[in-house]
Length: 254
Ligand code: PEP
Image 1 (cartoon, protein in one colour):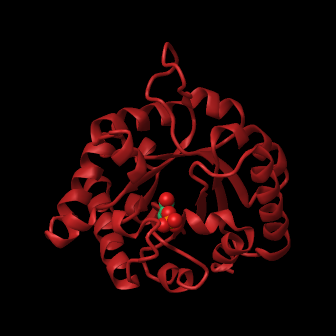
Image 2 (image 1 turned 90 degrees about the vertical axis):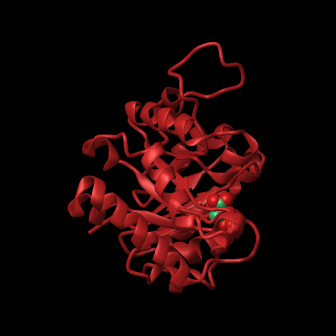
Image 3 (image 1 turned 120 degrees about the vertical axis):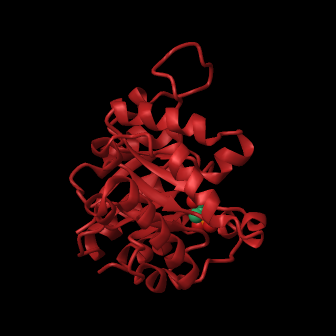
């Protein structure tokens, strides 16, 4: 059985104290209310990571992740944070290739391939985001876009490294817009992603890969999305900033 994951992406929200109190609420609710075998991952800004890891101790259903890492191991890159540093505070996941990084920071598939290598070399699990823009969907090129994001971003990995990845399908037109992909639209792409993985690494690896949906996912639409055969959870932006909403989405798997 592949792992079910609901990952929160706080983006650039929450000052230090706000983040700690939000996370404390999440941990308390997860402890008391979540009974299945799902994992909740909270991807916070760097400033929270160390404290969140400490607060999550003793709660095996909760893991902590960062939202980015630099592709170099270390060096003169003022303002950047390395994968080794993220690992050293006890975080275990890193979001890579989020559409906001692609759009606002010019991150392309070639750079993301390097970041993926560095993150894996430092023992962290990438949550690797892919997804098409509205123009690409309307122009009918969405399958090609997804295919190249996979082949140029992560298909250079050997099987052992690829097996450490979580893939997140996030249609750009659904992120932060309140417009969610329908469960049929999402399932169609998730099945395509799994088929591409199967063609590259074999059916066994494809069946074991966790593929998350992201894009205006909330407590009302999560159950229908997560009930689809190839959707193994969600990457949650806005709704992860409210403890009740985030935990209700995590509980969808109960
Ligand atoms: C995201 O940023 O990864 C995301 C899915 O955002 P939202 O849930 O707010 O659409």
